Structures are given as structure tokens and as C-alpha cells.
Image (cartoon, rainbow over all chains, first blue to last red; front, side, top):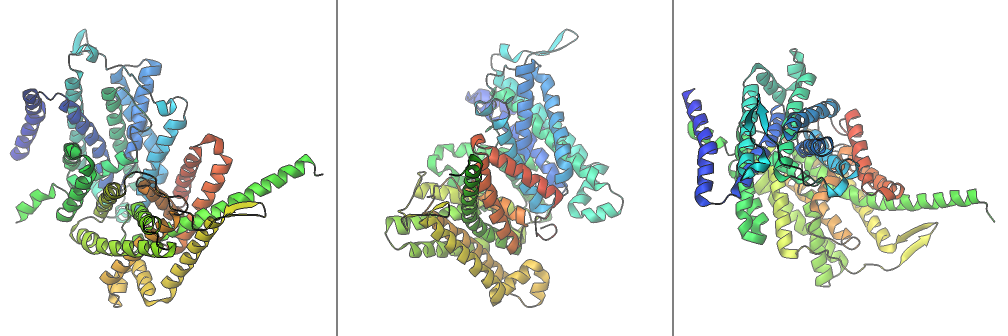
Length: 321
Length: 303
């Protein structure tokens, strides 16, 4: 218990104090955007991880991230909503949509589910191109930055537009959201429901035969997963101030899944580590120019050969040995 | 002189014949791509994300041998097939087998497959560049009769594809290797107990699947050309075909290939004005179809 607590404190110190200090010391404020992206993408990956947890391969998280982004953008631009209200609404909208979509498709298993979700990403992109409200390929641009939040006349969060460097604000916002999402995920996995979900991963028929309502449970897990996807998409458009049908594509969906694999499917914090390593790795390799993809993919193949159960399985090796 | 209504029906019929001819030609190509993918899936439960990239590599090899070096087209296509078979065999032996053995969860092979897809993409981009590449026509002239207009090279390629499909079915049905692979796909453990050398036939199966991808790539480079970016979209199409027909089943892959070819051909004609809507309709229809029939047309339960 104390070990976990120490780990948590170290992590909080790292993200809230060490990272800003390091960035201030090096003067590379553009790195804030990188870490914001990592935090937001790891929220979406956490959703994918949850569907892995119930034994489904989800390659459709990009669809919900795109949907959440568009819901937020449309509410802000056409209906004049505040950015802050659109965040929960985007998440809930995606969760509701995923319940409708999930009921039929969660009956599928294995590759069938994986492929249907992959196609779902493509469907969402084509829908965003075809619908009138999403403004086609031109997308929705120049979305205003988030306004202030005040409670009883006290300003809790200042207007992002007045800030000297809104990137720092977005960094704190997305890191806090990331911590909240992973706290929810951790709590869920270690609860009674989490243990029942684990039984779905191993044998659905057996779980069903002892009275587990597997249909409701997997739809619930999928809805939470999509909520995470929609939330991260909505915050993302706040940070980039624009959204296009190509903002989240099949590649992103596949990357969300790869993040989970790389971090380790057996560990709650796997998607966070996986996102950090893959995203930073890809960006660090940028200087290698045309060899970027070659080095990146070779490293991935080697990692898979050496650590097929994810980076976090390194720790359990040591303990066993 | 025929009245306007007769002209209209005549026009519709002509159009339909054209559409069906195109659909059959497309379907034969697609079925051949799907066969390789479904073979690999049936044998190892691996969804080969790199299948489209293998197809593109096959196309580039034919482009080099036939287009650049000037050797006969048949030699070039055979070269594509053999190279891909060798690559496929190595991939199974040194990558997939290792990961399947060490991993706790079967799905880990998906990450490996995706990584190899990226790897192929990177290598092809470095070696062949990003330009669209084409080769000289293999046969000149256009078939124009019975209201159908179809270039001769398309007919030839379609026929070769059909022959390859029939050859593949015969191979799976009548040879010892084919029987062993069918047994493996049906029940791995039982096959092993009956004395089938599981490792050896899995490797042969993977090589064969990769070879089919290479052969289609080589054949099609003579018509559509090839560029290093189309691997991913081809993979997605191949996934759709095996889902329509049912993953891991030979007849399903062929049915899926022809159905998708026909749907595309009809859709692109009927919905031409709406552009991308064709694919939206196909995708939506596929999702609905799969929620009613989760295993595709003839797939085994839970693939």
C-alpha cells in the first residue's frame, strides 16, 4: 500500500512539477503540446484498454474521438456553448452512441469485432465528410479557446484567451483529466465489476452460466471506453482549435490499440506508458528523416519479440527471477 | 425505329452488362487477395495487417522485373510470387511463431502484424519512392461486343486470376499438403495428434498466403499500376471480404471477394454523383449484415 502511495506521489510530482520545470529550464515550450497530446491520447487508449479487458479488440476508438471532437466543435461554434460544458456532453453523446452501436456489434468476437470497429472509424470519417453540419472536408476551424470558469463570483479557471501561454493551461487540463480517467479505470478494474469483467475476458459462456449479465456488462464497458474517446477528442479540438474529418483516422485507431499492446494488456497503466513511448519515440525519430518509419517499425518488431506482453511485463520478470 | 421506352431499357441492360463484367473482373482479383488472408487466418488465427503491403511489394517486383529489366511478364509475376513466399515463410518462422509462443494473449500477434506492415511500407518507400508506377500493357486492344466494353488485358488478367483460384482450390482439396492445412484449420490439436507436422505446414501456409498476395500484386500492376501508399487500403478491403464470407473459410473468401467486387462495381455506377457515399453505404450494409450474421456467410463460429 505504501509502495503504491509513494508511486502516486512521485508520479504527481513528475507531471505537475518536474515536467514544467524541465521545460522551463530548456526553454522548449513547444514540448507542452507534445505532452498534452500524450495525455489526451492516453485517455483514448485507456478506453481501448478497457475493451481489451472484456476480451474485445477495439480498433474503433478514432471514431469516438472524432465524434466527440465534432460534438464539442458544433456546440461551441453553432450553439454558443461554453467549452467546459461541451466536454461532458461530448463524452455522454459518444457513450450513448456506443450503446446503440454496441448492442448489435458486441455480439461479435475476435477479429470480427476488431474489423467492424475498424470499419466504424472509416464510417465516421465518411460521415463527417458527407454531413452538412460538419462542413465537409474543410472542417470546423478557428474554434475559440476555453472561457473562464467561476463559481460564486470566484474565478477558478481564467479565460484561456487572456493567458500568456495557453499551452501550459492545456497541459495542466489534460494531465488532470488523464489522472481522473486512470483513477476511474483503476477503481473500476479493482472493483467487483472489474473482476466480473475479467471473467468475460476468459470465458463468456461460463460467466453467463453463473448468472452474469454479460450483454449489459460488455455494453457498459464499451460505453465507458467510448466516453473516454469522446472526452479526449473534445479536449483535443480545444487545444488545436480546429477539427477535420481526417483529425482521427484508421491510423489513429490502430495507434490507440498499439499503445495498449506496447504498455501491456495486463496492466492498468499500460496504455499510459505505451502512449508516452510510442508518441515520444515517433517524434524523437523525426530528425532521422526518411528513415523515421523504418527505425520506428523495426523497434516495434524487436520490442514485440523481446517483450510480447508489453513494457510493464519487465517488472514482473524481475520479481519472478 | 424503337420508342423511347425501349431505348431506355436497352440502355439499362447495356449498363448492367457492363457493370456485371466489371464486377466479375474486380471480384476475381479480390477473391485471390482474400484467399491468402483467409488461409493465414485459418491456420494461425493471425490477422495479417501486412497483407496489403505484401500485395504492393509483389506489384513492385513485377514492375522492376518486367517494366525495368524487360523480362517477360510471366517471369516477373512468378518472381513476385516466389519472393513473397520466401518472405512469408521467414516471417512465420522467425516473427509470428516466436511471439505466439511467448505471449500470454493471442492478440499480441496483431501488434506484430501492424509493425511488419509499417516496416514493409517504410522499406518500399525507401526503395521505390512514392511515385505511382506503371508498366507497358501486356496485350493491346479492347473487347467491344454484346454491349460490353472491356480491354483485353483486363480479360486476360481476370482469366489468370480465375485459373489461379481454381488451382488453389484443387491444391487444397487433392494434395497432401492441402489436406494437412485443412486439418490444421479445422482443429489444430486433433491434427497434431494425427501426426500432422504443425510447424511445417503452418509455415507453408503462411508462405502460400503471402505468395497469393504477391501474385495478385504482380498481375494487377499491369492494369492499375502500383504505388507505395495503397497497402493499407487494400488490407482493409481484404478484411471486409473475409468478413462478408466468413474468416478462415476458402469458399467464404471467394464469395466475399466476388460480392465486394460486384457491390463496388454497381455502387460506383449508381452512386457516381455522390462520390464517397458508395463506401459509406457498403460499410453500413456490412455492419448491419454482421450484426445479424456474426460469422459472415459461411464462417466457423467465433472465427
